[in-house]
Amino acid sequence: MKALILDTQVCQVETESFPVAEPLVWIECPADCTTEWTYVDGVFVAPVVYVPTASDNKTTASGLLSATDWTTIADVSNPQTANPYLANQAEFIAYRNAVRNMAVYPVEGNLTWPTVPTENWVKV
Image (tube, rainbow, N blue to C red; front, top):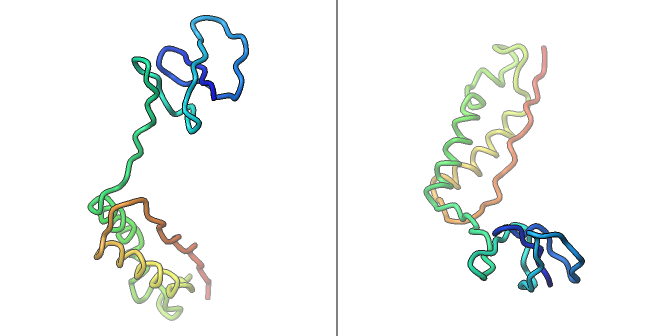
């Protein structure tokens, strides 16, 4: 593999080089090199991948719970007290239970977060 370098940035990665104008230059690179890499002092440097800490994930989960707190209000889903009313409160409760589990037992890493339900309002 060959990387097309401009200053310290990998601009392109190809199996074969082709003529380019200065200051661009082709340099042999690792097979997994991408345009997210840099080339510093003769060394290819892979990007630093951010891995959320358990604390980061707990903070994210807490924010997701806060954003859907309103769905837990009893009369939001009661057609006798709210018009329109939230017809799919049970979906929000299931979603919040999954997110709450992530907040109470946070782990490090890139998590697959549950998808927040779409509000389903019904007018009486």
